[in-house]
Image (cartoon, rainbow, N blue to C red; front, side, top):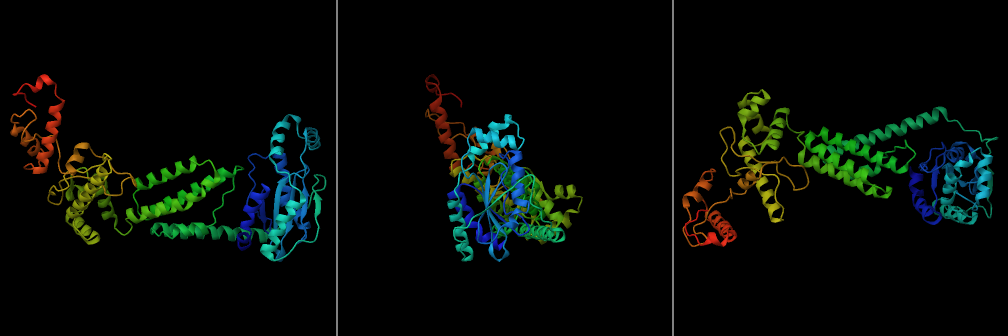
Length: 474
């Protein structure tokens, strides 16, 4: 990993200047990256495997670039690194552009049907044409920058791969298996530490995900591989917050959100910024919704309150549902939460009412609501209703009716004012009935003033012929 980190800046350099791949291989011929084989013709891809894994790289000498030509006339340039650090490989590229006749000759020599000429022609046209001088310059910068060495003067070896005389494939039986086993064990350990940090809501987990090596090279398409990798990360994070006793309702919402965002990505580069965003999003969920510190009974009570604030809540009803004595349940809730169930429900309703007010102040009509934030709780429970408080737009909220929203915000309704637009008296019995009939007590001055404004608006909308009637009834 240390060698790869030192070589990483040169990967971008080769991509930028030469428009081809830069691959690092260990002495065990384990590549740092895989070629995107979705567009590579199958016969050409097999010749690439001969370059990468056939053992030809062991013919290379440190300090001397070696140009390897496949049977299809496509080239790679390899350099054996100093200190036994492995190999670097630049390619694929063409030493010179092939015309139609040359391409037909190459395909015929390799037994490829000429009907596939167009497909191969498209691939050949996309390959860059590079001179030895350009490739040597790039490798010279790497040798000087990483090892403080220089390439042998004007030396450039070459090697042609022939299907009739393939290079012997090196075998690393026990050592290779041990290396792979150790790498897998390290990956699982890194995933475990990452999940534990997310379950605690530790934002430093976003830094840990950069250090955790997650690889998944199972299909030829490079973008598809990366998407699969991020889907695995999303699943790991989902299981992490599930271990933190976050309710599946919230986990499913955030998991579905990231799954859709991952699938919508069209460029591989757009995926990488999402890695930290995914981890931080799940950490925030664990911080705000984790119930790991509570017993199963109290967790069930908290969950019931979260999803039933818009309904009547009583300790007896919860006790019946859980099959537990109400007094024991109340004592357990007080001990673990630090307050009684009625106090907790009241706080949640007040918090939800504040959230609704903030939503109205921003010009949005609230879709979630609670009823009677200041209504008294029944003995052993709550008389009002509401929804769990939380940041607007951050998490899904259980829905309630519009009438309940009006109740949470002070019981504003359509009530008559003291005087109507036409100058005649209103019927106070109706105005009072509208408010008192809903259990809100005597109308407050602010409510009466708003009701009067509503009545004036109604009057302005009436036809002119109705306005002349002084005894009309609104």
